[in-house]
Amino acid sequence: MGCKTSPYQAGQGILFAEEVVRGDPLDPTNMFHFDAVCLNLPRSDTYQPQLSWVQKTWENKLACDVFIYVDDGRTTGNSYETCWQSAPRLGSVLNLLGIQDVPPVTWASSIVSSINNAVSLRISPDHWIKAQAMVSWIDEAAHYGEPIHHKTLESY
Image (cartoon, rainbow, N blue to C red; front, side, top):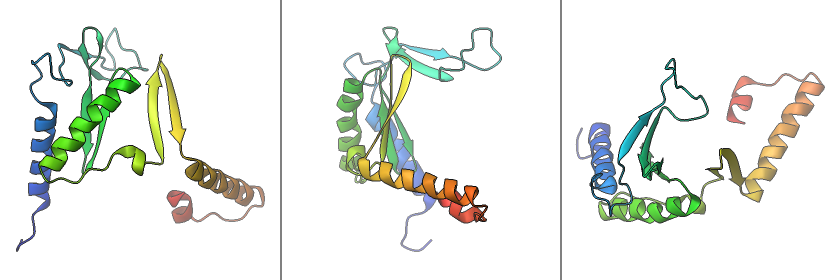
């Protein structure tokens, strides 16, 4: 591989970083602490499709958690405030370990939240205008019978 790191090493590094971010799950002062894992699996008698399959809970509330996909990390929690309190932990540990992390509000086009069993989406005005333009273009092309190329539709 020469002087470059391999994807395997990068994957190992981010998994190690994820463990460091989460810390000790048994420590009650840790914001990622949980005391139970609830399974909501399809085909079980108690399955509820609106809930996730696996939930970590603390005092019968959704516990904070961190999810990392490739180089993009997000925190979750039982309220907007707990998510924003746990996000600096994610960013500071990743930066301490030399992994670049940018908070989602600086570049994300949308932020999804779930409050009182309702899912809401916050989107920036620029991205909302762009999304409306794409939908309008698709609607006009379909209305006038113009062919819509697969790659163009896929990119939209």
